[in-house]
Length: 598
Image (cartoon, rainbow, N blue to C red):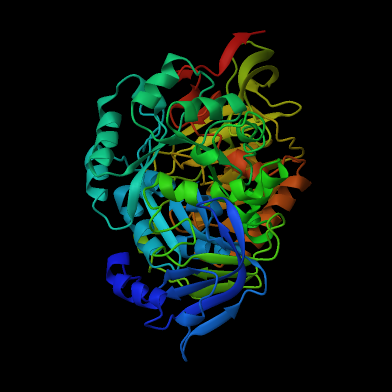
């Protein structure tokens, strides 16, 4: 892959091309220029490209055309900037950076700001470096945010590796690091934790952007303390008041539409109804699995959704291009069609439906008609990144038993309540039956377990969850378990739970569903137990089969697997599970499973 020259390196040629003294590499002719700088559309415009950057944008680029210039006829189509995803986790797609790029390029995404904190929890700084290095190989822009919180909540979970302020300071010198990943330990920031503030300080000293994550409905002094701590954005808002509070405090409100997070519609009214200045609002995905990427799209899906929610198409495009670029200090590099910027441009015939008909990145046609046209290079992932599931022993049904208080015929227990299409859970209670001294699930309440998989301790934490609707004898196990990425097992049958867990130990990670004594679906994720380097379409097909197996076991939730994978996310309220026990995230403390005897 040819290395993109800097603007300074290309300036003499860009000037010569714009002036007509030298020919352009490519000219796009006769399109409608969507100018996100001015929020207007300009008809019958041409764009000239040289050295992978825009040289001339205006009414007539005929003076830029030489005998070897490639001429692309826009034929009256809109020319829009390549789309930017402001906050995302590559690992959520179950794909490596290369395969993720291959999946999203045909959808018009040309810039991504990735936070690899999933692999950081498994492999530490080494894992972040591997993700960073593969990202830099891609034909589109993939910047890396250095993960800030591994563990995400110290004292409430144990990770495979920890991230330190020294790690953050070291990473700030890497060529592809754009800032600090989401600061999930918001209680730490609010309480002045020295480690968290040191990470923020190291990032600010490097002149880079601090990502935020304030997953609390409390907009009082705690929120103001968090804003004072330095995070520059936040994507955890779920209602209009959240978005307004963030932008009033000088933060960017990132509105997300992922595979399971539908937080745009409830917040975009701050623009569409309240009339707030949209420049500090940004669109992102956060988490998209491979099925969404293959079948529904990526940032083009988010922009279409924002428009469907009443947003002006030009404002929606600004929120996925120039606003993002400005936030990360890259408005002179990406985010608009203007001289000197990287030549990332999409041709589309409709600004509302947004069909992605041609994608150009750094001046090269990278996708056309939904088909990728370039290679996305892979790293040679080392063996130690492919051997990360350490159970220590074979698990049995007895490992998933939950003992009742002596002599009890039933027990009142805390239950994690899944909320469809949202990251937060509910802290519920249920009276469950006791059989032969063991508490059993009943109705929609089944068992959940967190199996330690980093150090081979053999540890298993057991609790209860509701909302999936599972029936029959079944279990679903996954080594994708945000953010500590141990192993989450949810099931109605303890023997099936043991079988599912052992299967993932055997294959080195992934997701498996067992029902009625046999495996019904398997998605192998051999890299860190999080990702596959197989093509996205293959991974999506396996994930689709998993979804079908979940539905056959009674689950009807939208993107239920995403909900499953977040049940150990101990920084989002209200109730979660970790290797240390059940976590009350409203108080950030461990809590007892059994409430009272009944």
